[in-house]
Length: 460
View 1: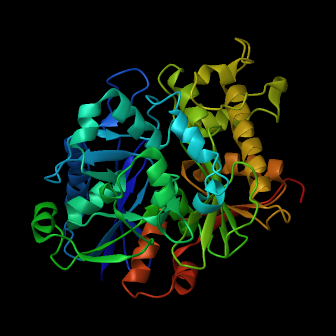
View 2 (view 1 turned 90 degrees about the vertical axis):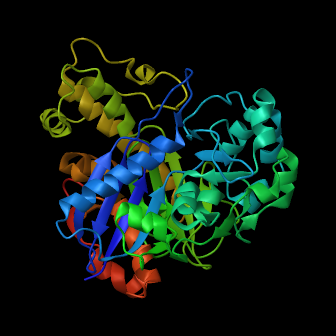
């Protein structure tokens, strides 16, 4: 039976997965990319290390399957946004991948604020405002501080664009990824000339924009042979990881809501038209079909706080053990509140109320409650007409029954946890399955997306 290979290019981990014709996750390999920090606040990934990481993960997956990967019908991806590399006139990358958390452009170039303040900026791009973590801020920083780099550049690739280029030789980007640059006219699904002119970015540097789920044809034969895929294997354009997670959680119909509690907290809803006045902080991006858009709210009060706190504990305890300690503590234990984390500063500031007398369980529960309160705020901003019937949960935190129950109690609505432990990868696989004519998403999702448990508010 044919299978689909997915490559999830996350911030913390890259994950390579294999799904069968029924949407079952057969194998998964997870690896932390070797991110470098050449200067404080800088986040870089050398292109050679990027490719080596992907090759190695696929290789381990091939070994795990005694039969190899000869049945892979398509390869696709889920990805982070605003991470990019510059290429020269020979189409060779000559910078490292500069990743989205990189802070070298803080404070941002004034042209960034001027672009954000255009009267039609939000309506065109779906972006509330630009800031120093956006790709364009770092490009302007390079032009100002490393002019030789700017002068040499002839092509730009986002992280997933370079994966696409390596596998297919085509310079293509996905609409949701392009939409988070603040340079895309999301209704036209094309680069906005006025924005490019304001920041001085040549349009011929930029990739062609296509919708998620576009079939680019077979991957390059030489690469297929190198990584052990069949010559018939096709490359299907994936999408932004948060949007893939929404699809993989079964969030397909307008008004549905899903969330991912990971490196950031992101909540997504589906729209059938562009909103005239989205709430403050809500991002709008193109989806997999012309009559679908994703609206997203995200913030930094998320599982990253738990990761940081865990790293401060002796032996870095297992997450399941931390969850059990938290479950043994009452709600709002000892009145401890973890302060919301705005990002860009020391995470320790969010723990300013923690005292030596607080137990590990108290602190962990307070972290979970803080993320749940942030989630409630995001759901409210995305659902102005009223609370949704339920919220579908994705990401690693969805495997924690205790955390799901806290969210249900604080939001006052059911939280649905999917069976598949990797809904982001599943969402990318669903897009590929549709492109392979295995069925429409509306037909495939009921078969592929299963809910392992619904968490109802306590006492209801």
